[in-house]
Amino acid sequence: MTPSQRSAPGRPKIGVFDSGVGGLTVLRALVERIPEADYLYFGDTARLPYGSKSAATVAHYAVGAVRYLQEQGAELLVIACNTATALALNEIKAAAGVEVIGVVEPGAHAAAVATHKRKVVVIGTEATISSHAYRRALEDREIAVREKACPLFVPLVEEGWLEHPVTEQVARIYLSEAFSDEASDADVLVLGCTHYPLIKPLLRRVAPAHIAIVDSAESTARDVARHLVPQLKNELRGVPLLKFFATDSAEKFRKMGTRFLGLPVEDVVHVDLKE
Amino acid sequence: MTPSQRSAPGRPKIGVFDSGVGGLTVLRALVERIPEADYLYFGDTARLPYGSKSAATVAHYAVGAVRYLQEQGAELLVIACNTATALALNEIKAAAGVEVIGVVEPGAHAAAVATHKRKVVVIGTEATISSHAYRRALEDREIAVREKACPLFVPLVEEGWLEHPVTEQVARIYLSEAFSDEASDADVLVLGCTHYPLIKPLLRRVAPAHIAIVDSAESTARDVARHLVPQLKNELRGVPLLKFFATDSAEKFRKMGTRFLGLPVEDVVHVDLKE
Image (cartoon, rainbow over all chains, first blue to last red; front, side, top):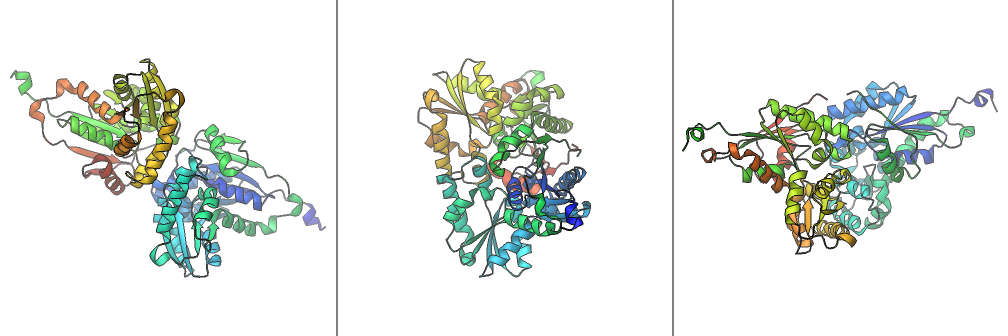
């Protein structure tokens, strides 16, 4: 073992930002893939959803939140919010002094690798879809895109109806619209919303069998792991430290969060950000 | 005719406040019942939904909005938002210099008049239900209450699925839970959310025939009319002037609003409130 390896530089600290609890599915993927790191998660729950807000407002909120994460020691930032990535990634990058990774590019990259027909369907919230961020990222890779907003999936997930006949019926309606006409031979479905991984088994059943499902959360975690390669040491393996900040009730965050993280959400601090 | 009746004091100006477009169902009921008044409607669309926010945050936002309505000349304020009424009516009343009417008391009063079994079911959003504002208002009248949150109704209405098999299936599930066990002989259903009047025909079909449906919007309009009696003159009849303020996109408000109001939403001004 060389001296540089022995003098372990400490575990890398990753800041994860979302407007709410949805980004916890990204944190979950990160923890599974990179247990050598510690994590700070910021959920701007008092000001969600970002989907109905202007790009300027979203950028202003997101920059405030990532600054806070940096003050807490985050050395790399993950924007685990499709809307914030779509509307404000450049502003966040300009304001941050560290590496910033959004969810759109990794998702688009994974879709580009997976599609043989060069034709992809992206589903997400109204805001993400109308931003056309995935469309741009995929068209840059010369891939045809059908975008489809699925506004009922988030409330269905939040209702806990993950394996419910109503959710299945809604999924059948949305996916049959998404894969209609010129998109009928698309072979990849991108989950462009952090809530959707929770209904991935149901979507897997409803979607035609030949379609590959790309989960932005997993793709983003893979991308972060690639960035961290030089820092990751085997001797750092162990249980990641998770710390949470929420702008609305810590108790509510704890309760709702556990379902999204798949792990207990314990250390939650309420934060009041100056506007 | 007495001289005081002849010297018409001008049309009363009523301020209506909601976190979004839902309160337009209350405005619709007001316009139908009191065409002698003019209306200013404030939708805090940039900061909705209030349902996921703390009482302090909701009070802060609502007070800012009603102050704005008063600056615009509102002489009576209607809080056409169940969450704001439930969480912040006292703070709003304390901050306002004019009469303030919320949606909960009129709804509870109408339910109390309608129930023979002295047993009522209230449906609403998660936030309204967990505030127990309707429970308190009804128990004060010695009426037993079953409260049931129906979080999927708002997104279903916003999706435009007003007469859709999915909405019907969801309504069957929610109402059968609501009217179960000790609430099985309740004879009144209170629509404790401003979005629900749009699915009232569907709820009428799904609910057992003997159950009376109380719509808070209509009850509130009746209450406002009672308050205004001294001011209402027959010679004021005519087309009410409607003016709208929205904190997010005016265009989006105009588009979505028409469905809720049942009238064209034209004069919309974007407002940026200081936090």
